[in-house]
Length: 140
Image (cartoon, rainbow, N blue to C red; front, side):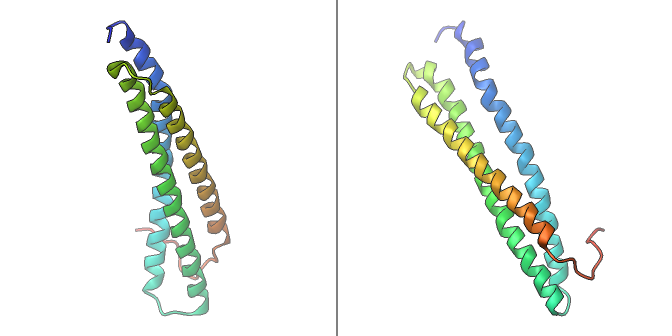
């Protein structure tokens, strides 16, 4: 590999790196929402069961499942972006043509990210439907 190619190689990898940073920020938001739902579920599970609490816990359980799905899809997207970046760097180092593989890995990353965004939207909608219990919000 020629030294002159290094700046071009770095420039080619910048777009996927920015996407990876965005996915990381999005994962932070999902993790925060998931943690709040889990904390609320744990607080409610310590109280004697009645119909209102059971309904709220059921709603929280659904939110937790959907947030986990969003997390899994976004982690898969991030891993696919990592594969894209690796293939971009391997292409000139091995003098092979990984262009098509990098393209498919990028498409997979975007499809997984779209799925994660849809799951995130579903979690938000579930949060809006979850009945409000008699307890104040869980904050310490």
